[in-house]
Length: 235
Image 1 (cartoon, rainbow, N blue to C red):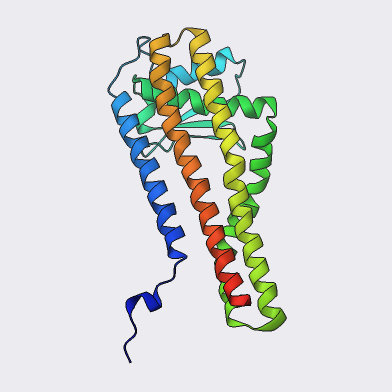
Image 2: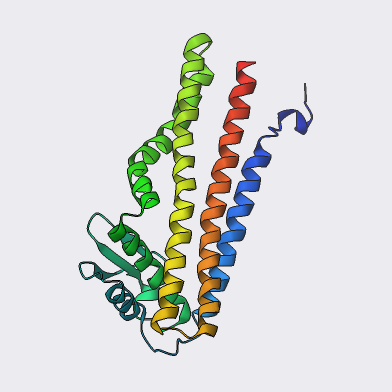
């Protein structure tokens, strides 16, 4: 017996598709904005790593190393080793995009130096979020295979595990927005950038922040899908 195609369609896939579209749109916006301002040279002529050194010095931070890391937009600050790593697209570039990204990572170093609470919370959530994202679906699948109390227990554990990953995404948002705010303020007050250049930098950092917002939104939609799926199973 043949069943119509819609008979097999899982409506919760709409949430997955929506999450993918949101992430793709944010990623495309980030790439186009970065590429646009990577072709605009900053008036100071400072490279990304020179700008990072200057920003850290003006913030009174002298114990952070600046290193080059392979890749494109792989820039990050490692609070465990106090190392600021700048990607190939940032390290030796004198563009507005490169200086802005480098200053943003310095913002994380400033957060670390000042004991910024959301950063500390995010750091403590890293192992739990990694564990949660790894175990969530296996626990849910086991719960779907069992019946009765065993099923309920595994489904709840799976939802809890995935919720930890979602919580990490949410805590990341204020951390990233705050780091960008710090970067913009110090670039303007130090004279490293002119006011009109600051506007371009804000666009680059704003586009980068959208990728984190999109990631959080996608995770929330995925969590909602899991709740709907497990709710249908319980009924």
